[in-house]
Amino acid sequence: MLARKLVLTLSLFTAGIGTALADAHTISYGAKAAALGATITLAGQDFVMVRIPFRTFTGEKYYIFAPAPVEELFGGSISVITSHDTRAFSPNININNVPARVSVSDTRSYSLSGDIGTDATFLVQAAASVSITLKIGQTLVSLAASVGKPPGFTSFETNEEVGAAYNIVPFAAFASYTDPLQQVKAVNDYIDYIRIVAL
Image 1 (cartoon, rainbow, N blue to C red):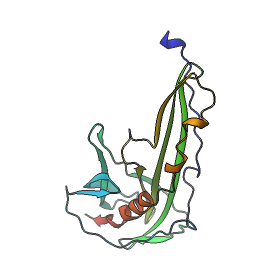
Image 2: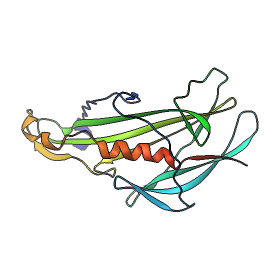
Image 3: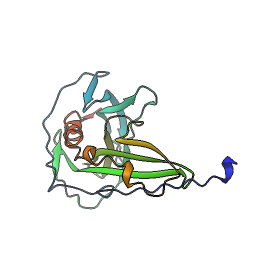
């Protein structure tokens, strides 16, 4: 029976993934101190300070000191990706004296899933995210972070069982679908904790 259930998710985003919103949200860097292993909280989301080593494509060794998101139920993770790139780089900010290209986006997803027309759920979740790319010689170093409104992977602005309904409009909580300004500030603050250190 479960194998026959059709699961359909419709997600509409108020801003495209990866869309830079420089006009809506100013990006800045102002170094903030935190100790290795320290927990910092940004808009209700906990992060722990970690050092991740990496090697450039020309052989230099570095580490990035950055906040890794942690969740009580799911643990945490952070990914640092390097790529070889000899093209010209257009930074829009310097992070710890390293040229960087940073974009901040705020999004909201509206999802209808389950056995639509029989037993479905309407979920709404907002978040702000930051995408960071740093240039060290011929190496691009990339990472990203996100903070939800409310914080947490399992937190939603709306989480409603809609049953057999096809008209989902009555289930909307429009008053709570506000611009996640606190989360935008949080991902901008996230940048302030980043350091690139040569080994």
